[in-house]
Amino acid sequence: MSLLSRFVDERFLEHRRRSTSIAGIACAATALVLFEYRLLVNHVMSWELLGIGLVFVVIKMTLMVWYALKR
Image (cartoon, rainbow, N blue to C red; front, side, top):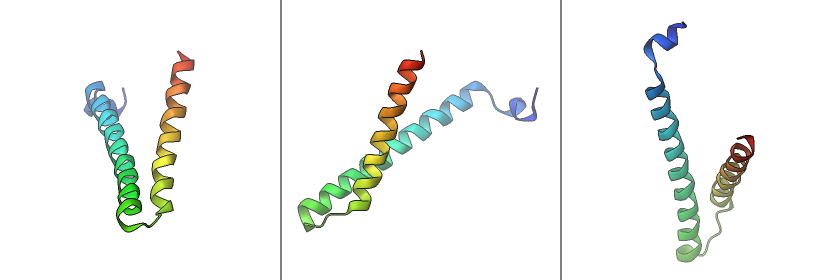
């Protein structure tokens, strides 16, 4: 038994996984919403915000397909 397993159990790791996933989704959604806001209100294209949002979407969809095929 490792030192880490004495202090950390599956419930903690599952909580950490879920909270990290939700935080990532929230950041990507914020980047996309901010991109649209700047485009519609200020008429400025913020390509870096669009890039951040699209990279997240591509990674999330790729991992969803990967995990579905691995089962």
